[in-house]
Image 1: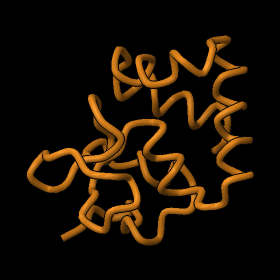
Image 2: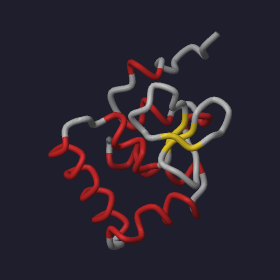
Image 3: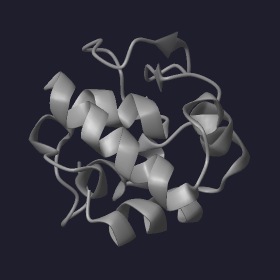
Image 4: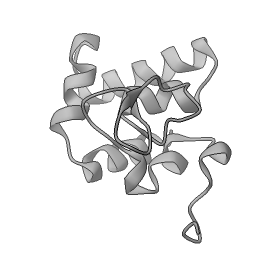
Length: 104
């Protein structure tokens, strides 16, 4: 049974929706299935996502994804090549606070 106030994965329209449930965030790959195995972020088996994987899952339009990526990079003042490592060295709270701050 899902926690009240947490949207089902299919209904997530923003990263804030997606990462409102701490279990939906991961490190080390774009997405993981329920067994912890790495999968593509668009895979129907995906249940948790890194920041980039979450962006790809929630924002399906390429132009929107690129804009969201740039918002994050500008806020963090890092090059695109450090995007994945930022997620992996951050805590859940840091990632969630970032998406809340950017309202994405």
